Amino acid sequence: MELTGSRQIAADRATVWAALNDPEVLKTAIPGCQEMTGSPEAGFAATVKQKVGPVSATFHGAVQLSNVMPGVSYTISGEGKGGAAGFAKGGADVRLEDKDGGTLLTYDVKANVGGKLAQLGSRLIDGFAKKMADQFFENFQAAVEGPAVEVAAPAATPVIAAAEAAPAAMVAPISPVPPSPRVAAAGPAAAKPAAPAQGPAKKPGWFARLFGRKA
Image (cartoon, rainbow, N blue to C red; front, side, top):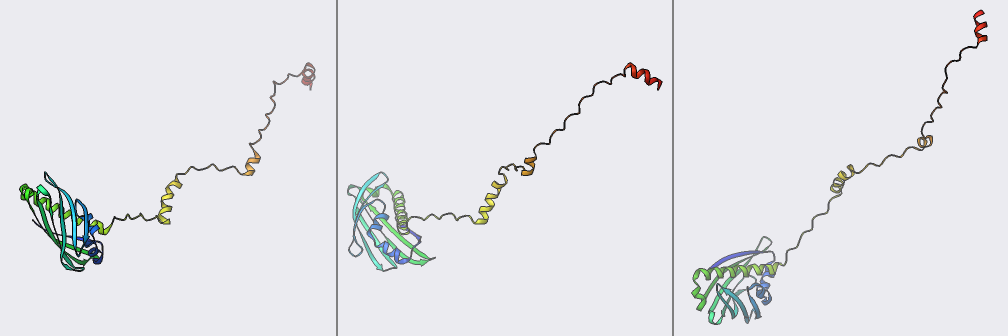
C-alpha cells in the first residue's frame, strides 16, 4: 500500500524538525503506541497495540531513521511482530519546506503486512494503513502546534455602549415633578362663604298698609 499526503503546520521548520526526532512526540503521534525509547541516532524501540478488523495484536518492534538531511527530510521506517497475528512493516519519506509563515510537511508512505493479517484482504489492510498514516500525522501536527487558543471578544467601544444603554433610558419610568414651594404653601383655594339664604318677603303690617295707601 502506498499513500501520499501533506500537512501545513503552524510552526517554523526548526521546531517541526526537532519534533520529528523527539521520541515523546513520536510516541504521542503513533496510534496505539504504549512505549517508545531510544534516540534518533541509535533508533527507537516501540510497543504498539492495534486492532485490524477482527484481529487484535500487540506489536514489538524497532523504528529507524535513515536518509537524514537535517532540517529538510528523512525516512522513518519500522517493523513489528505481533505473534500469531503476523507482522507489519512500513515507512514514510518525510520532507519539510517553508510555506505561508509555517512549515509544509509532505509524506510518502509504504506499508506491508504478513501472516494472519495478510489473510484479511488488501481492501481492509489498505484502509487500515491509510487510517494509521492519517492519524499519525494529525496527532503529530496537534502535538507541535499545541491546543488552540480562544480569542476573547473585543470590548464594546464607548459609542456602542452608549447606544445600547439609550433604549433602556427611554423606557425608564418618569418620576412625578414635585410642586413648587409657592404652590405648596398656597394650598387649595379657600372657599368663599355662601350668602345667607333669604326667607320669603314679609307682608307690611296694618299700620303700613293704612298710611301707605294715603300717601
